[in-house]
Image (cartoon, rainbow, N blue to C red; front, side, top):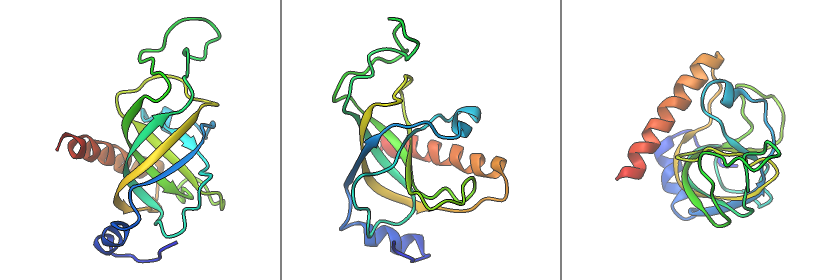
Length: 161
């Protein structure tokens, strides 16, 4: 991983690496995002991510498998039914989640704009488009989610440009 601490230097370094698509199966996390009103699609990337910094990226998520229904076991549609190949703007954290996890597993957690549905067990592609900021360790969950909410709002503005 790049160990540069200057966000502008990291953004410049990523210009040759991005866009970069990573893929994986959506798995259950700790549920903290959902609890704080920012549900995420979590994957462990299959691809080599060498050269990419841990941190937050503006991204695009493409659903590879059709989620079909809301996961309730019946035919009730989720609010947004998206078929195979549907693509959504997202903001993604790539890293080891130092504020909530001391493990060594690298995760990609994507908040998907304008999508509400059940993606657990489905394959997705996450295309990292632009590096926003380095991953940080926060003193509290409240501080972490305050920053996540700001990142989400920044992303909304970014994608409107």
